[in-house]
Length: 189
Image 1 (cartoon, rainbow, N blue to C red):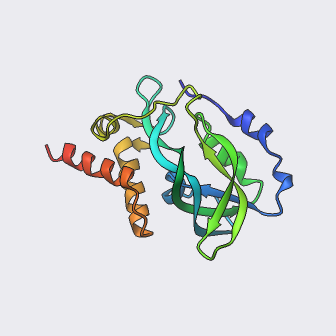
Image 2 (image 1 turned 120 degrees about the horizontal axis):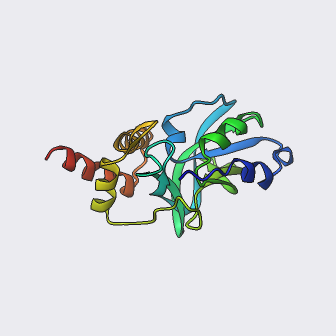
């Protein structure tokens, strides 16, 4: 069953407190940009790794058979690469709806390639949300993803698009690449 976090997100952080609003994207927000933005830049955050441990019953799966999408898990010393979008407050109505299934807006330091650092926002799904599926072996994750599909399409295409987008930016994410390889192996059977 989808968890709707829209109201929670509207009450979490006053968007008026930011001189400029930056959003860090690390999953589908890298390759499926369906919102206007003022600018975008390659960026990274510290202390988190990207993992496909969040259930998706509204995009890449169904309530009866959720797919898997990316979230961030805390890991000392980790760096997660993605894209930072400079946006206006108005975009968060759409973004809160898009990321509503268990994701909460969190404040985070975003680092740009030129060394600049800004305080921004990121959508993160933590283990305490009802849609969190947690970790599994790469093979188990790949089989789950291979068998999942939802209103936004096949779950495997989420992985393929994410891997392609990361590669295009020169980012090596071992978790995503291992899932891509495992999915291709399943498809070749």
